[in-house]
Image (cartoon, rainbow, N blue to C red; front, side, top):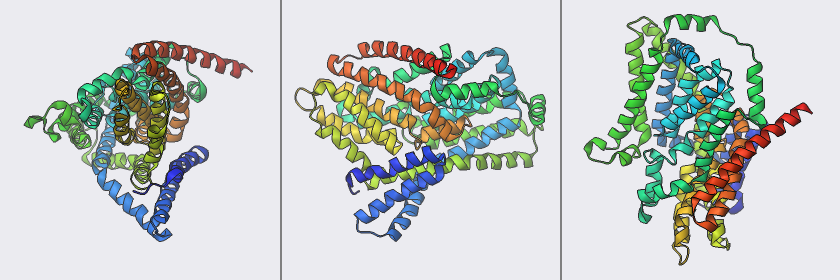
Length: 496
């Protein structure tokens, strides 16, 4: 790796700005990636030709490193298409429509399901989207709103769940400072995760949207309720079990698969096992769901064997566009993190800032947020920042700030990851909701940023009081008040 200073900020900023301005993600990510390679090539006495060659070398390497994720996405999306073509999704939507009769209940049910599936954020995004999309579509909840709920109950829930792949990753980073016990101690200080969950439920209960999300919701309600002949036929032959059984088997086998791959059945603890190689375990679960669908659909002649294979191919074809975004974002993150030192440049501010220690948590939160947003990875961010934070807090008089500083590190990492257009969780959330990726980013950004601003206030309080409870109480009051004020402001603007 070569530290290139402020120049290392150009690739992520270029990719993000181009994506937001042009509404075209693929070329924006590639331009950001290639600009990073050009910077690295010239900084290491290379040439433009070597930058081109290294771009594709890194693509090949990142595809190999994330091969299990690619296989998992392909299998999972094949199951999603099969469930839909069997009529199971529509049958479930009709049944759930009788139980969940209004938009608020649908939003809350989606939120609760997102919290229940806390093992892995990517798995959460795609599973919740598959199960709840028929319900939210029927009740005219916009795809943008569904994508936000999915995203807000993915990483923010996983980062505070004691049994998740995230918990294991964090505990391994602080193994010299108490490990898992230290991770548990950071949960009350992870203000972004706590406030995000509070915001999801506040908006779900009150229905008080604002900004681009409010417009998306209004546009969705204005649409005529259309139902295609294909869907009507699917309803007649599909049953609820055609959705519930494959998805249930997939979830159970995914958890067992993660435990098996990680060595749980050979004596490794469950929490360590699921964090060893979660995508390998998820792949086993997706394959089990695919086999279940085959045994459930073919004997009942819901589809022929030829149609079954054709739907698998269709499912894999449908996941190619978001998969391409993922691959490009992995590469852009790899350039920033591994070659030109974007993370090290930003994190350098933490170790060089001469501020009173009471300001340390809010400073760390902001820097972690910038790093995660620019690199599109929360794991990579807290992986770089935690050693620096623990080093700072090991100094005499600073030991008491360790837990709150670590909580701020994790919170900032999740915020940046939550709203970054190049984050895999953001991409998978828009994929699970079947929402245009840039629309998800645009509508979610004001919500996530509101929570982040309130987190800054909370960390200022926590930095000087060294207790999370005052920050949590003040933050929730401010959050609810801000939601009502912004909703009313939108109403006034709309009338004018």
